[in-house]
Image (cartoon, rainbow, N blue to C red; front, side):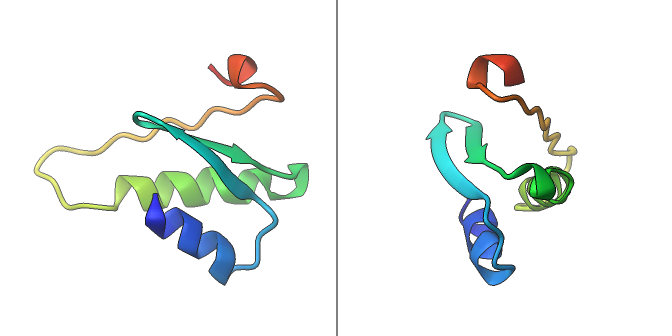
Length: 69
């Protein structure tokens, strides 16, 4: 999560991390950055630690949290 937040600042993206709920991260993302954010969050979160088993990251989106589930 910290790597994602730092990368958002480093790349001057307008997307913002709004909330963490247990193992879920909630972002506010302009439509122009949606594809970038889907790739960025998935890549960073799945590679945050080296494990013997793959760390699977699901990325969903919607105008509301309910729509994204």
